[in-house]
Image 1 (cartoon, rainbow, N blue to C red):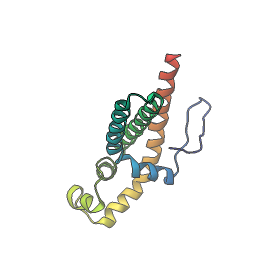
Image 2 (cartoon, one colour):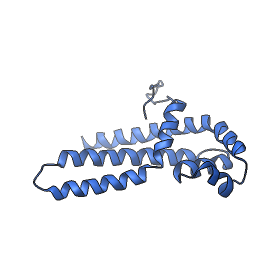
Image 3 (cartoon, rainbow, N blue to C red):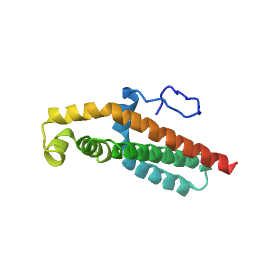
Image 4 (cartoon, helix red, strand yellow):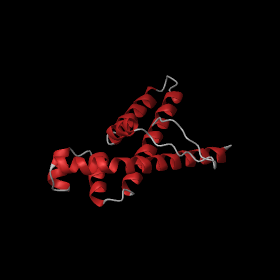
Length: 150
């Protein structure tokens, strides 16, 4: 997810993704499992070709899988940290499980669509802050792992 970086005096990324960035990530994160399955099938097909050097393309696909998994983990961790339990249930059902709003309001929280949207929208700023922290933490872990390899 791209957003303008703000670095504090300790070198920590304190930037918060914009609502547009967050919503774009949330729209795609619950599709990641399906996309990862398709990428694995693609990798297997490329390996079967044998006579064509596909190692670089396979490496790029594997990196894409790792990036998507890291983003999904960050989203899941941020959702788990939302302070309001109902908002947490709504976010989990919507973005981790891919439930529709009708499924959420009839099966998960049993309230009107309007109230569910209101709770969701009220929790979004907290979620954006938590997501920025998780993404920053994930990026720092990736950087430290890379530094260990050097």
